[in-house]
Image (cartoon, rainbow, N blue to C red; front, side, top):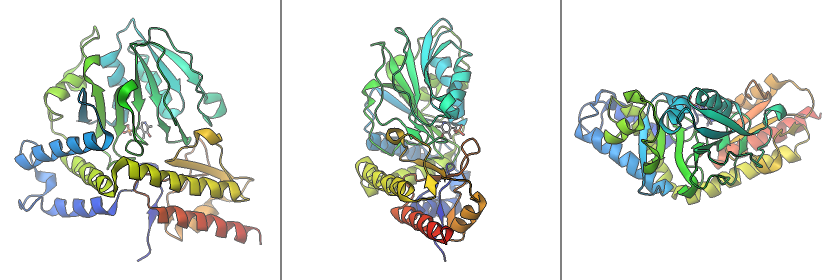
Length: 361
Ligand SMILES: *Cc1c(COP(=O)(O)O)cnc(C)c1O
């Protein structure tokens, strides 16, 4: 059987170990004779699974004790409104960086709940870099950033400081969570949809500092109130147990591999290889400023007009799948999340070289 490498931006590729465990658990979870899909979230094995997954996430990311870890539904997109609803009163201001489509969506939602100041925007440059000289509000409650811009392939390599000493950073880490170490000092809240770098779609991890809650002067619907989910350990209503199971297996795989120290190294090597080939290759180019290039999503285009479908088919014939770029950037995008092995990147580099020599004949 030919090896297939899935370069999809999301849902992203998962480790084989997690998929094998999932297929077994769908038939029979831990020899109970019952499928994971049928198990009650109140049953002992599932209560243990939830706790174990939270513990694993806390251990891998070194999350300090004053942060809660929640598993919520509604995707990262629900967090765009849940965050300001819980943290920002109508008469208060939050700063937002406009670094891509997801960042812009977060801004639009936040405007419903308070004053939103755009600290920087690279929209007019089609988000090809991150503008780091921020205009911050002195008393802003928080500063919102998108740590990795999935569509445009930019990534914050280090995080800004808040101008307000009492302020904190809120970060959408949907597409680079668990790809590198995080220093929690400046963060108040970190959120990430699972389906890019830690599991299948259906659950969103929210890591939230204890002291920032309970300060807004509005009523919050029960399901959208972080305190509900803190008090009920993410099981106020029926959680997506099978999704959390696959997250658990993906994190177990990561721990086995050596955790964030090991994966950070591996991600760096993968990204360097691919960017080096794009630079070297005479027919491809990368639209993103050098210093902001993402280690997770690598967009590239033809230097001159070319037949994009022909290259996509050339790759697909070799088992290199889902390389089409996002419609707002065009060209190609290789998402090389944690679970993409080095061999997958090597195979893509070889395909780019072979296409170049074929093209020049
Ligand atoms: C995919 C993505 C989202 C949207 O996630 P959903 O879970 O589909 O709501 C938000 N932010 C970033 C950075 C993403 O990559």
